Length: 141
Image (tube, rainbow, N blue to C red):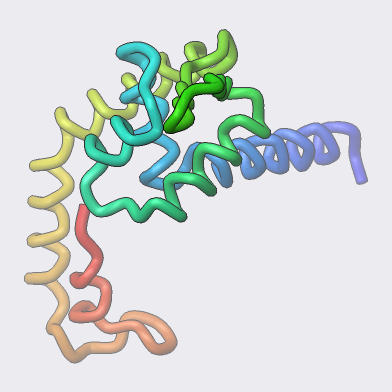
């Protein structure tokens, strides 16, 4: 294996590891919300429509493990837990904001491309093993 191939392979692994954490919808949303400042667990739960308490807990633990957020527990009754971005987490706001801006600017172009693609292929014509245009069209942006 050439040195260049090893480097590219290593870079791909690094990107994949990071995207495994920040590539899911909950992590990105939590990082974006914490970009506005410290939030309590209950506050995050109210702000994130559709997230279960368990999923919020798991996502926060993963973000904390990766060094993107800190968790501060206050010895009160009931217990108070605050979450905030670390320096590393604040650095992630730049690409997340860029991606969100790109998505907003290009959403209609992507929708138009999908409609053009769907019109070009019949809904029943197989595109690849087990895939039809109808099945692909179910995915939304």
